[in-house]
Image 1: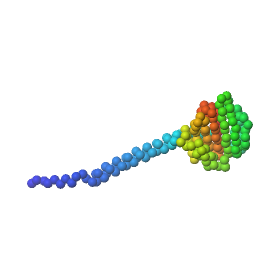
Image 2 (image 1 turned 180 degrees about the horizontal axis):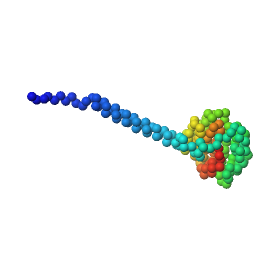
Image 3 (image 1 turned 45 degrees about the horizontal axis):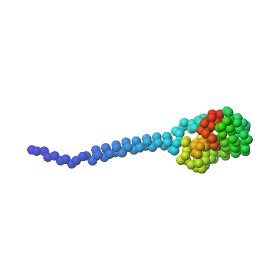
Image 4 (image 1 turned 135 degrees about the vertical axis):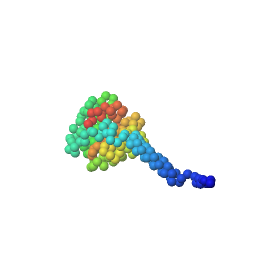
Length: 181
């Protein structure tokens, strides 16, 4: 007696299992790529949790009653301040050291969200695409850009908002070494 062979082709259950495994593996790889891309790029953002530029997260948040002469001293490192315009609610001044020039403006906002919104406003005016580093809607929020030879660095920490225009990256770096907020 001869056996008859009934070859119906590949088993559909095995095909289903293999396709499911391939789809799950591809989905996991895609998810990992998405996580890595969102934490490392975001238009020049630094990785979250690294403290931001100039270690903003580790800097002091001034008390509400910090005197202006403490928050905005007449000298920071080698930088000397000109006239302080305004008060802690809304201030403006220029610091200079040789050829370095820092225009500093800022304010004490009504709450943390308002301070973060002030940084976001600067980023919208200047343009997000030009950002070197940015982190918005978090504490600290920051926006750093080099546009047309002027370095613009805006940040918030707690209720405080600061906005610097520096004539060079070196000027900003030197100033931020001495500015503790």
